[in-house]
Length: 349
Image (cartoon, rainbow, N blue to C red; front, side):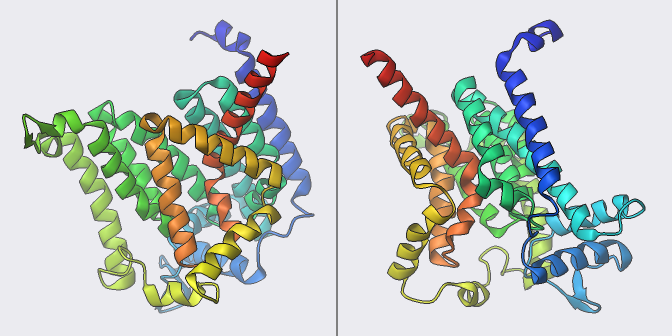
């Protein structure tokens, strides 16, 4: 598409307007919105600073820290290093980084849903990502959540491409690894990718009543496995003596869990969702998920991702606010439902 056609694309113009207004709004809200818990801010800022001052991932000198995945603190440290000559308020530097990440997230949400569905779904999902109050508040906090949401939707974007083209295996692997090293929910994307690959290439794998492993012997697949295994193994070895990062420390996660039985935690999770996502939006999301299930042959990588992440949240922490991590996907389904409702109403008028 040439420049003239880009200028005529009303959806790209709308996306640019959404991004500009969103950035301006968040800049004005930086002083008003508390950027997370004070303790969390201290942890993230200290971890980021120590990356460059001590060249170590630790809160206290000589005591390696392993309760937070390293990618976000590293990026925060880079930002502090870059912006500190101009700003001495580390929370504001963190807010600037958050605005950059959330803006890229809005763009990637558009790109993802445009490729999967259409531009109408994409622009609506981007709009919800930009102007949902829940998302605005969360996106300004010193937290790995927005970066994880970005790595999640980007990983899925390339997972979809890899299902049709082997050359995208390594790129998908890069973003799967970044997701896992941003928040530990990202480890589930390894399973999502492999299951999706087997489903998409079933005719290539299961042929002539035999199982063929040729796909898994290809150079691109082997490179992808190396990209995933080496960083995750090194982080796992450094943090948990080889095993904890693959199956996150049950004792630590149990400590973070909400009190009560599994049924109570699950009930509290769903009961608390309207405190973060408006009830009307939840209805649209459920409607969109129903439509997505009917088109499962196209949507199974997303549905698997949502299922795995939801299971992790219900099994361990069970906090409704963690639904923010899934909003790039959930708002896409809300958009699908909204457009379907419009289509039904238009037919009846």
